[in-house]
Length: 94
Image (cartoon, rainbow, N blue to C red; front, side, top):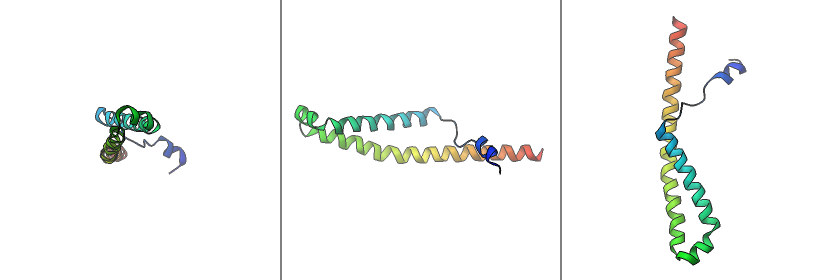
């Protein structure tokens, strides 16, 4: 396979609405977690020990969301690439 053919090969499936929503949720959680960590002292003085709970909640959400997203994305990519390979093989046979 030539390098030019490799450049033309799609690397991932088109993103569905659900996958996009999950990706954007992960990015939002990461942004909020970073802001929470940077502003932990003012948050702690404003709401008390609940500030640590906010950070822990965001971290727990990420611990759950990231593996779920990665699994769903890998499945979608594999199915898409299998479909592409099957249609490419069918095109070669014709």
